Length: 242
Image 1: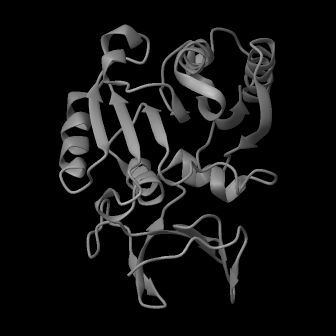
Image 2: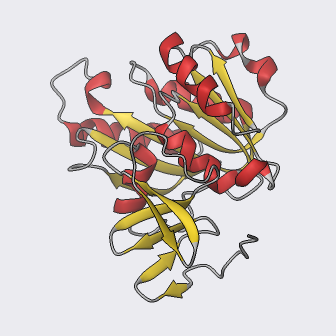
């Protein structure tokens, strides 16, 4: 079934579309299932007007948490269909699977591309399994700090970046990655874990403020700083443009 791209914020009763493939039903987030009848991480499946969607659990996805908590940029956080995306710290593929629904769609009819980089071989196995039925998803074993080791997998500069790595120097890695790979005017999201940045007794709020200052000093325009407390404690999501 062909799904026409709705107008931003299109209302379907109590349902509200964030994009062609992602919608809100009350507080619940749903993405159009690109592999029908398949659940990726135990999430529930449900049909709306005869079309199957997957529930996006914001307690298991930093991007999902950001969509739930954003006040100004809810419609802007997601990449567009057909975009080329880079995800650093892709993990086991929870968020990746929903991003795929949005960027690629069934059988990648939007011709999108997602380069999913993770340092864990166990995560890579899960990503490879996920990619079997999702053309356009490219799992890469690599260290976020060592871009030269996986840069050859990058086709060109990308439209959208999400970084979710739990190691010190998260902001520096993000700035270097965005400067190297993000297109002019592209969108990038940094999921920052405060505990990974603590070399002093600074509070989470002080760490988040310091990172905001670092991003602005690096020349990025911060569209929104989104606190994820209650969904992903000790985390903050920064949405920036270069």
